Length: 256
Image 1 (tube, rainbow, N blue to C red):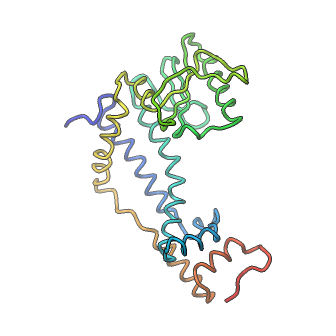
Image 2: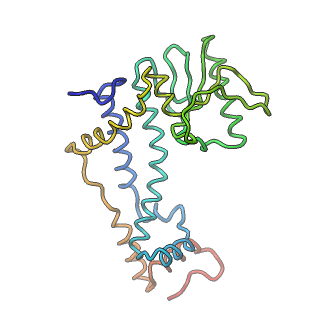
Image 3: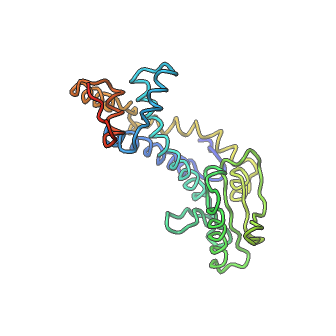
């Protein structure tokens, strides 16, 4: 069988994709009415969206479910890149607690991977820098380098020394790097990131079609639960959402 990409085996690529698909399944399966309302829906936005975008209650609830699931999956996408890069020979992914996400086996490279360039802001930039510096200092390798990886950069492809002049942080062995350049750095292949992107839908479809993967539910139970609760209280779904979010506010709950 033709290889998906040159830098890892087909089995490893499929394993990483399989792990992410399972996270999608788990996230959707765990979405219940209790979980749906736990983080609070914004009833004001709900009623504006319904009326301005001409959405039915069901359409709006489905979009809210998708939004809540998306927040969890966004974090899992970062794990996907770490899992994939950790399969490259000479490198390993490290779990939460180590600080760095990817490390070279010979301690020559440390990386903190962020899915987007604007994930880290303000004072957190200084903390990230100091963490990267500490990995180098503790590496025992005089040639060690540390990288702030931005899978989705600000639109440019780059690998450059990173310093923060106003904090007097200017270590020549600390870099910030776009996703494509980091894939290139670890694989030695200029278009490694591109090749991964091209192969990804092929791998997803293969793994998705495996017998153990069921078609994902549409979370209709949440809608059924909302309808049942609303009917029992003799109110509409929108009113129930207002009452759920603002239950401790003056004047609530709204009565039928």
